[in-house]
Image (cartoon, rainbow, N blue to C red; front, side, top):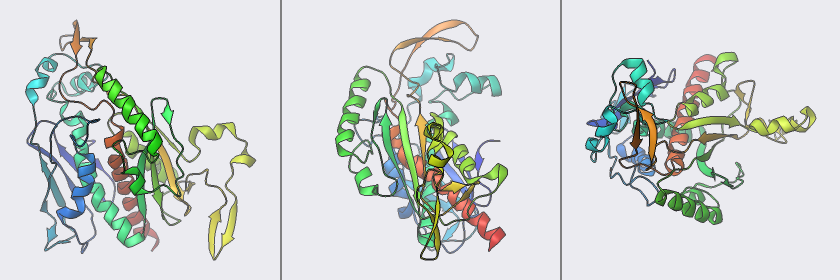
Length: 359
């Protein structure tokens, strides 16, 4: 089943969008890590709905509770269960969707696979499932920061045709968090916010790109062949709701270069190997090379729009459906902490795998 992720640091998320709550079980967390709800809540606050005028107005505090796996503020090495109560569920807004499939949602495909589906907000297919990912990612980020000195960031770098360049080496968390849209360029952020607001008033939605960054990853993490570090990052990002594309380093832009132009040349500096450029995005042969890891994730426009569109019902008859309920006009601002969380989960898992095999 596709509800678990990771090998040595393994998570299993659970819960539905309009059920009693959502959460995650984290297995494989090292013991004696100082951990309380206060370590997790800030990332959930960055992900939660209702946080600004450009996201869904659903009001959820997303208050985290640790149900197991800690004792007197430290991890035990046993499974950690984390839970967030759903406080503002309104399943009645989705009653028409009980028999009609929403265009570009998972309604039809879940029906085709299971013969039954939770039509209240999409159930497990809802982005509300990512609460568990972000909670688990906060633990992973704490391990990476405290034990390895790794910094993980993400930011919005494009919405529709508006984009801004970002230097993975110098972008700062405080610049990213200084505006509603989480774009480190203040000038571009103002334009993006106006674009989202216009699109929302028109009853439509937008897509774009989130850039993910991990600084301080040591060389040697990752695996050859099937479990390459960039392959696991790609799987992590493409498992996110609305994610439709992934590239790392130069990505698709690299095809315009020759090999001589694209190669990252090695140099020795103060007893370490560095590269003059970083078009590989910090990973070569599926293994980290010590340079900054950076990548891009493309998110499609939100599938729910407030206009009547063609669809079919569960008896496969043609009909129409207009979007209802509370939805983000653009997922990008709230996707930033989710991308960070999945990055942390991949890296901490590979850190533990590397230690188990090579140290």
